[in-house]
Length: 246
Image (tube, rainbow, N blue to C red; front, side, top):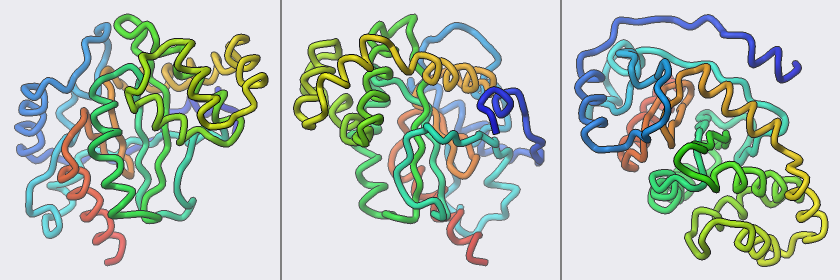
Protein backbone atom coordinates (compact mmCIF):
# COMPACT_ATOMS: atom_id res chain seq x y z
CA UNK A 1 0.00 0.00 0.00
CA UNK A 2 1.46 3.42 -0.89
CA UNK A 3 2.99 5.32 1.98
CA UNK A 4 0.71 8.34 1.65
CA UNK A 5 -2.43 6.21 1.63
CA UNK A 6 -1.26 4.49 4.81
CA UNK A 7 -0.49 7.79 6.39
CA UNK A 8 -3.97 9.14 5.60
CA UNK A 9 -5.78 6.19 7.12
CA UNK A 10 -6.59 6.14 10.80
CA UNK A 11 -7.61 2.66 11.69
CA UNK A 12 -10.47 2.01 14.05
CA UNK A 13 -9.42 1.11 17.54
CA UNK A 14 -11.24 -0.18 20.57
CA UNK A 15 -11.69 2.18 23.51
CA UNK A 16 -11.86 0.77 27.01
CA UNK A 17 -12.46 2.33 30.39
CA UNK A 18 -9.13 3.52 31.70
CA UNK A 19 -7.79 2.28 35.00
CA UNK A 20 -6.97 5.10 37.41
CA UNK A 21 -3.44 3.74 37.82
CA UNK A 22 -2.58 4.81 34.30
CA UNK A 23 -3.50 8.41 35.13
CA UNK A 24 -1.31 8.35 38.22
CA UNK A 25 1.52 6.73 36.28
CA UNK A 26 1.36 9.42 33.63
CA UNK A 27 1.51 12.18 36.24
CA UNK A 28 4.59 10.50 37.72
CA UNK A 29 6.07 10.28 34.24
CA UNK A 30 5.68 14.02 33.83
CA UNK A 31 7.45 14.52 37.14
CA UNK A 32 10.29 12.35 35.88
CA UNK A 33 11.03 14.88 33.18
CA UNK A 34 10.83 12.54 30.20
CA UNK A 35 8.83 14.85 27.94
CA UNK A 36 10.72 17.00 25.46
CA UNK A 37 9.77 20.64 25.01
CA UNK A 38 8.33 20.58 21.51
CA UNK A 39 5.80 22.85 19.88
CA UNK A 40 2.28 22.44 21.34
CA UNK A 41 0.03 20.02 19.47
CA UNK A 42 -2.58 17.40 20.22
CA UNK A 43 -0.54 14.98 22.25
CA UNK A 44 -0.72 11.30 23.08
CA UNK A 45 0.49 12.33 26.50
CA UNK A 46 -2.52 14.60 26.94
CA UNK A 47 -4.92 11.71 26.51
CA UNK A 48 -6.02 9.83 29.65
CA UNK A 49 -5.99 6.65 27.55
CA UNK A 50 -2.20 6.36 27.42
CA UNK A 51 -0.52 3.66 29.49
CA UNK A 52 3.00 4.78 30.42
CA UNK A 53 3.56 2.21 33.15
CA UNK A 54 1.88 -0.91 34.53
CA UNK A 55 0.92 -2.24 37.96
CA UNK A 56 3.21 -4.91 39.37
CA UNK A 57 0.35 -7.40 39.05
CA UNK A 58 0.35 -6.96 35.26
CA UNK A 59 0.77 -10.67 34.60
CA UNK A 60 -2.49 -11.53 36.31
CA UNK A 61 -4.52 -8.34 35.92
CA UNK A 62 -7.51 -8.13 33.60
CA UNK A 63 -6.72 -6.62 30.21
CA UNK A 64 -9.00 -3.65 30.92
CA UNK A 65 -6.54 -2.65 33.64
CA UNK A 66 -3.54 -2.84 31.32
CA UNK A 67 -4.58 -1.71 27.87
CA UNK A 68 -6.62 1.45 27.64
CA UNK A 69 -5.90 1.93 23.94
CA UNK A 70 -3.81 0.32 21.22
CA UNK A 71 -2.46 2.45 18.41
CA UNK A 72 -2.15 1.04 14.89
CA UNK A 73 1.02 2.23 13.16
CA UNK A 74 1.89 1.10 9.63
CA UNK A 75 5.28 -0.54 9.17
CA UNK A 76 6.82 0.57 5.89
CA UNK A 77 9.09 -1.46 3.64
CA UNK A 78 11.88 1.07 4.21
CA UNK A 79 11.60 1.15 8.01
CA UNK A 80 14.66 -0.12 9.88
CA UNK A 81 13.60 -3.47 11.36
CA UNK A 82 15.48 -5.78 13.71
CA UNK A 83 14.02 -9.16 14.59
CA UNK A 84 11.81 -11.80 12.94
CA UNK A 85 8.58 -10.85 11.21
CA UNK A 86 6.64 -13.38 13.29
CA UNK A 87 7.93 -12.16 16.67
CA UNK A 88 5.08 -11.97 19.20
CA UNK A 89 6.20 -8.53 20.39
CA UNK A 90 6.64 -5.51 18.14
CA UNK A 91 8.24 -2.39 19.61
CA UNK A 92 8.02 0.74 17.49
CA UNK A 93 10.19 3.60 18.68
CA UNK A 94 9.87 7.24 17.65
CA UNK A 95 13.26 8.74 18.40
CA UNK A 96 15.76 11.49 17.70
CA UNK A 97 19.50 10.75 17.58
CA UNK A 98 20.30 13.99 19.41
CA UNK A 99 17.81 13.31 22.22
CA UNK A 100 19.59 12.51 25.52
CA UNK A 101 16.66 10.39 26.73
CA UNK A 102 16.77 8.34 23.52
CA UNK A 103 20.48 7.88 24.13
CA UNK A 104 19.73 6.73 27.68
CA UNK A 105 17.26 4.15 26.41
CA UNK A 106 19.74 2.95 23.78
CA UNK A 107 22.48 2.54 26.38
CA UNK A 108 20.54 1.14 29.32
CA UNK A 109 17.30 -0.53 28.23
CA UNK A 110 17.58 -1.57 24.59
CA UNK A 111 20.56 -3.93 25.20
CA UNK A 112 18.69 -5.66 28.04
CA UNK A 113 15.63 -6.17 25.83
CA UNK A 114 17.80 -7.76 23.15
CA UNK A 115 19.62 -9.91 25.70
CA UNK A 116 16.56 -11.12 27.60
CA UNK A 117 13.93 -11.46 24.87
CA UNK A 118 15.96 -12.00 21.70
CA UNK A 119 13.86 -13.16 18.77
CA UNK A 120 10.63 -12.61 20.68
CA UNK A 121 10.86 -8.90 19.81
CA UNK A 122 10.77 -7.14 16.48
CA UNK A 123 12.14 -3.59 16.77
CA UNK A 124 11.10 -0.84 14.34
CA UNK A 125 12.76 2.56 14.37
CA UNK A 126 10.82 5.67 13.31
CA UNK A 127 12.34 9.11 12.93
CA UNK A 128 11.01 11.96 15.04
CA UNK A 129 13.62 14.74 14.73
CA UNK A 130 12.90 17.61 17.11
CA UNK A 131 14.61 20.19 14.92
CA UNK A 132 13.58 23.19 17.01
CA UNK A 133 15.88 22.07 19.84
CA UNK A 134 18.18 19.54 18.17
CA UNK A 135 19.92 20.99 15.08
CA UNK A 136 21.61 17.67 14.28
CA UNK A 137 18.44 15.59 14.60
CA UNK A 138 17.48 15.72 10.93
CA UNK A 139 21.03 15.37 9.49
CA UNK A 140 21.76 12.38 11.73
CA UNK A 141 18.50 10.75 10.65
CA UNK A 142 19.50 11.22 7.01
CA UNK A 143 22.91 9.69 7.72
CA UNK A 144 21.33 6.67 9.42
CA UNK A 145 19.24 5.96 6.34
CA UNK A 146 22.33 6.16 4.15
CA UNK A 147 23.89 3.52 6.40
CA UNK A 148 20.69 1.47 6.16
CA UNK A 149 21.04 1.59 2.37
CA UNK A 150 24.21 -0.46 2.86
CA UNK A 151 22.60 -2.82 5.37
CA UNK A 152 24.16 -1.26 8.47
CA UNK A 153 21.40 0.79 10.07
CA UNK A 154 21.49 -0.81 13.52
CA UNK A 155 25.26 -0.71 13.79
CA UNK A 156 25.19 2.95 12.74
CA UNK A 157 22.28 3.57 15.15
CA UNK A 158 24.45 2.25 17.99
CA UNK A 159 27.36 4.50 17.01
CA UNK A 160 25.17 7.62 16.78
CA UNK A 161 23.93 6.94 20.31
CA UNK A 162 27.36 5.92 21.61
CA UNK A 163 28.55 9.48 22.21
CA UNK A 164 32.00 8.63 20.80
CA UNK A 165 31.87 11.79 18.68
CA UNK A 166 29.77 14.93 18.78
CA UNK A 167 27.03 14.69 16.16
CA UNK A 168 27.90 16.48 12.93
CA UNK A 169 29.21 15.73 9.45
CA UNK A 170 32.64 14.76 10.73
CA UNK A 171 31.06 12.12 12.96
CA UNK A 172 28.72 10.83 10.25
CA UNK A 173 31.56 10.21 7.82
CA UNK A 174 33.84 8.83 10.53
CA UNK A 175 31.19 6.32 11.59
CA UNK A 176 30.69 5.29 7.96
CA UNK A 177 34.43 4.58 7.72
CA UNK A 178 34.41 2.77 11.05
CA UNK A 179 31.75 0.40 9.70
CA UNK A 180 33.65 -0.04 6.42
CA UNK A 181 30.79 1.36 4.38
CA UNK A 182 31.26 2.47 0.79
CA UNK A 183 32.15 6.00 1.83
CA UNK A 184 31.77 7.48 -1.65
CA UNK A 185 28.21 6.17 -1.94
CA UNK A 186 27.47 7.17 1.65
CA UNK A 187 28.72 10.70 0.99
CA UNK A 188 26.63 11.04 -2.15
CA UNK A 189 23.55 9.75 -0.33
CA UNK A 190 24.05 12.13 2.59
CA UNK A 191 24.96 15.23 0.59
CA UNK A 192 21.95 14.92 -1.70
CA UNK A 193 19.71 14.41 1.36
CA UNK A 194 18.30 11.33 -0.33
CA UNK A 195 15.99 10.31 2.51
CA UNK A 196 14.48 13.66 3.41
CA UNK A 197 11.01 12.55 2.34
CA UNK A 198 11.18 9.33 4.36
CA UNK A 199 12.32 11.09 7.53
CA UNK A 200 9.66 13.78 7.13
CA UNK A 201 6.98 11.16 6.51
CA UNK A 202 7.82 9.40 9.79
CA UNK A 203 7.65 12.71 11.62
CA UNK A 204 4.36 13.69 10.02
CA UNK A 205 2.63 10.45 10.93
CA UNK A 206 4.01 10.58 14.47
CA UNK A 207 2.66 14.11 14.85
CA UNK A 208 -0.70 12.93 13.49
CA UNK A 209 -0.74 10.25 16.20
CA UNK A 210 0.06 12.93 18.77
CA UNK A 211 3.69 12.12 19.50
CA UNK A 212 5.27 15.19 21.06
CA UNK A 213 8.26 13.77 22.92
CA UNK A 214 11.14 11.42 22.34
CA UNK A 215 11.48 8.61 22.86
CA UNK A 216 7.90 7.40 22.46
CA UNK A 217 7.32 3.66 22.12
CA UNK A 218 4.45 1.45 21.06
CA UNK A 219 4.66 -2.10 22.40
CA UNK A 220 2.12 -4.08 20.40
CA UNK A 221 0.34 -0.74 20.06
CA UNK A 222 0.52 0.19 23.77
CA UNK A 223 2.07 3.64 24.20
CA UNK A 224 5.02 4.08 26.56
CA UNK A 225 6.33 7.62 26.85
CA UNK A 226 9.91 8.44 27.76
CA UNK A 227 13.07 6.55 28.67
CA UNK A 228 11.22 4.38 31.16
CA UNK A 229 13.24 1.76 33.05
CA UNK A 230 13.65 -1.78 31.78
CA UNK A 231 11.14 -3.04 34.35
CA UNK A 232 8.29 -1.12 32.68
CA UNK A 233 9.05 -2.65 29.29
CA UNK A 234 9.44 -6.12 30.83
CA UNK A 235 6.06 -5.93 32.58
CA UNK A 236 4.26 -5.03 29.36
CA UNK A 237 6.15 -7.61 27.29
CA UNK A 238 5.57 -10.37 29.84
CA UNK A 239 1.88 -9.49 29.99
CA UNK A 240 1.61 -9.62 26.21
CA UNK A 241 3.46 -12.94 25.97
CA UNK A 242 1.35 -14.55 28.67
CA UNK A 243 -1.92 -13.36 27.18
CA UNK A 244 -0.97 -14.44 23.66
CA UNK A 245 -0.25 -17.93 24.94
CA UNK A 246 -3.61 -18.22 26.71
